[in-house]
Amino acid sequence: MNTTTFITFVGEQCGKANEAMEFYTSLFPNSEIVNSTKFAEGEAGGTPDLIKHAIFTLNGTRYMISENNYNHAWSISPGVSLFVESDSEEEIENLFKALSANGQIMIPLDSYETGDYGFGKKFGWCEDKYGVSWQFLLL
Image (tube, rainbow, N blue to C red):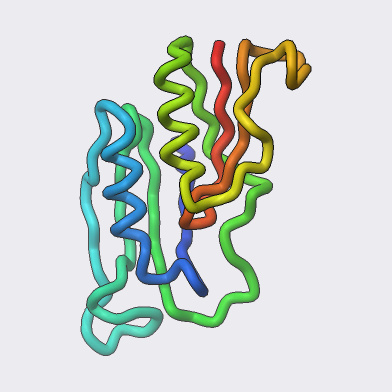
């Protein structure tokens, strides 16, 4: 049995799934878009320019992504986030800067002493420009 994070782009984010995958895989080492299937012409839920289902990896961890043009009553929630930890301060700072650009910083990337989060050397939380939530921990 496996579990995998599955991100669905709907509403304002519909049409941005491929762009997001390309952006994410450009930031993390050992990352790639494994496969991507688009909707067929006339297929319910999408158009040929939308991703019906795709798999990508970030530093070897597998993720799934999809988008559709149905009118859902939900979107991506910050209550579930992708958690990034590293012992490289430069790596954490660069990723936080890149992923928070044009998004929203919910907790600034700050040191343990000033943020007093009780774990790690630095911690931060942001939402990227696609609405995906990310947490960062410098070990």
